[in-house]
Image (cartoon, rainbow, N blue to C red; front, side):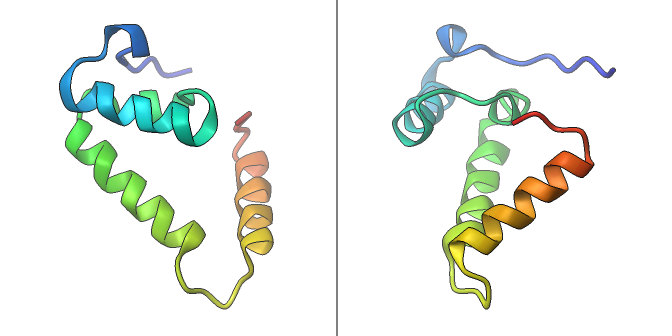
Length: 81
């Protein structure tokens, strides 16, 4: 398994701390997929925007269908989140 350095919520400062606070408000915790991008808060913010556009923006799929696709792909990739 690969090892990627990440910044934990209690260590976060500045823009990253604010992104983590938003994550906790949104999901109740900071998921590992978010922490993996912690060394580049600018990229993390862009990724969050992309995620929101894909999951909540206009689409031919319902919100439930999008979640189902994400769940199936995560399972196929061996993700546990």
